[in-house]
Length: 291
Image 1 (cartoon, rainbow, N blue to C red):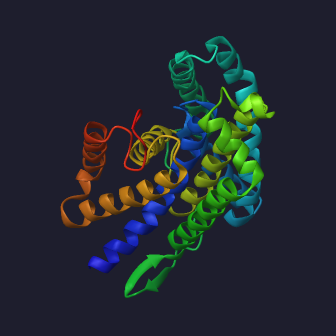
Image 2: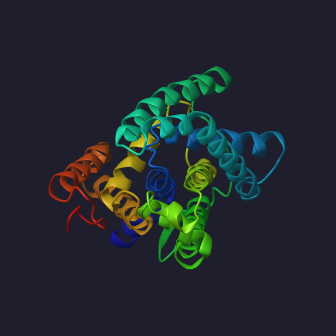
């Protein structure tokens, strides 16, 4: 039973990790805390559902299409909605408050559009839903596929950010946005790319979540809150921290559901979040200011 709980927790945590990485990138590079993040996940899930049921396209094919649409939507959203907020803030902390309020409003706009189009009922489709034996534990093939894809995408993104010149530019803007123009970096353009990349990761997460989980137009808030918990636990702007914290959260939820009570998983999530916030506010893998 312990091994099965561990495997199921890792599978769940892998999805949380990928979903949270996009949010931490958006905040780390563009300084935008996107409270409408979960709505993009649900929009991607509905788009994948449409591609699968109406055009017969596999979610694996959708994973090549939907994140590209997500990147374009995120880049455009930054240019039209966020850039004026960035210009008005003048590099002060006002941007964080303004972006939280703006994306909080965007959340309800996107949720309302989805409710009009798809209604409030739960939606799902059958894809690789047969069981696979893993070390004596039966796990749905679609969950295993989602975990494998999350691991590959997360590792590729980390290597890209750490080893490529492009990743170096993104990290430079994240670490020192005031100094980055001195070495010829276009901060506004890189911030827009970072916001678009975060939205693309949200869309990729939505594709994978749709493969094994029912979803509705009202579920975006739940994904936003869980991504926020993972981002704060891992250290805001810390990609590796978000990946590890996502896996930890998946393990905690699975162990609580198996050994205590499934109804307490959400309570355990926020108890863990409160503990980190009180005793290590910079996150488990973040650095304290002034340390």
